[in-house]
Amino acid sequence: MMGFEFNLGEWTILLFRVLHIVTAIAWIGASFYFVWLDMNLRPVPEAKQGKGLHGDLWAIHGGGIYEVQKYTLAPPQMPQTLHWFKWEAYSTWLTGSALLVLLYYGRAQTYLIDGSSWVQEPSVAILASIGFLALSVGGYEVLVRRKNLSVRLLAGLIVLWLGMLCWLAFQLFSQKAAPIHIGAAMASIMAANVLLGIIPGQRALVQAIESGGELDPEPALAARKRSLHNNYLTLPVVLCMVSNHSMFLYGHPLAWAVLIALMLNAAYLRHFFNLRHQGILRPSIIVISAVIFVLTAMVSDRLAGGVSFVEDDSEVAVLTDQQMLVLVAEHCGNCHAMEPTFPGYAAAPGGIVLDSLGALDTYKARTVSSLKSGYMPLGNMGGLTVEQRAAMLRYLE
Image (cartoon, rainbow, N blue to C red; front, side, top):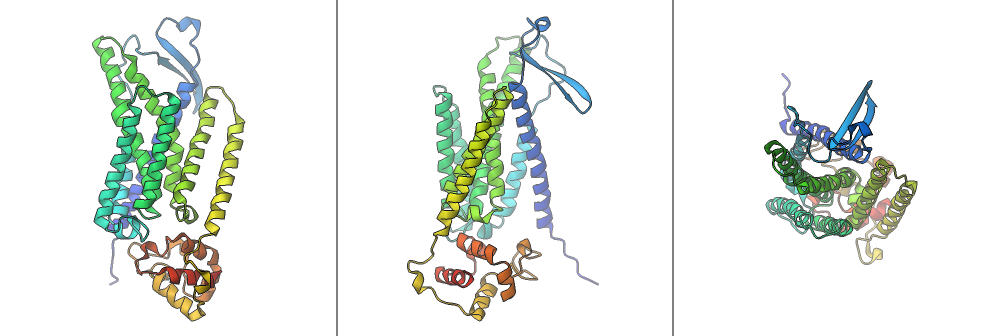
């Protein structure tokens, strides 16, 4: 009878990946929709004036025509059913946290740290990760609660804070874990906006309406500000979460700076749509954003091309074919083999099997990129030296 092995850990990770993506789509979709709705409201017609309405909007979707109205503060009478939008945010954060624990905390030695990170002990790295996320939210809360800051000054300070966090993440954690932590930090800020600002502000408004007390617009305005912040953070968060699939990005010697440039550009692109919702069309933003992206790519590739792992390239050893195959088998073969022995891999990552000179030639470009990034071998658990890495690169190039 054939043996049966049920890989519970991998199935659990797959389940939470799917749940995280689905809930994130719902959250981002709701954010985009309500910002679009708020910015597309039109003045109410004369027949509806005097009812406390701020604006209304007509739309058609799915074969039906809808009318949406927004009250300045309170409707004449509270409805029996009032829909709240919060579980999309909470579910996205919870499933994302579960993935962080399963992948990066459960396999900290492999994924959370590497030879270049400040933290080298897995247990310390986990504590550093938790502290990093708490620090991210705490710093933002200090800024957003300041009432004497102009919109532009607050935006500038938030950008500066996120830039500092981006740099810090690439110092504390492995190259692949850093972008995930930056994305998780912004996602935690967004979830905290919902938990600590948006929902309390809405709850205070509803309670004041139901009690017949005096309506204070301040909590509602603060909630709207946080909601708009979340809207601008959505694209940078998505960028961070997908960037750890691009080795040329997270493995770049100045990855933190490249990522900051791309995140700022993503938020700038989002600004185009927010202006468009208000009837302000500025196609120049798309053109400028495209130019920034191309320039960032060109400059980052140019800088990466000059990376050297040794002070004097003339001292780099010249490997024979057999010596190269031995190094590949020793440092790459546990993952990139027909039957990987590395935990969590049932097949070679990306289908790349490096078991012959022909395979090295076929995957030459990707192998060079992996070695130059410094990220591979994964976690450098086999102890590939700087000199060996330089020799392998010389052989391939």
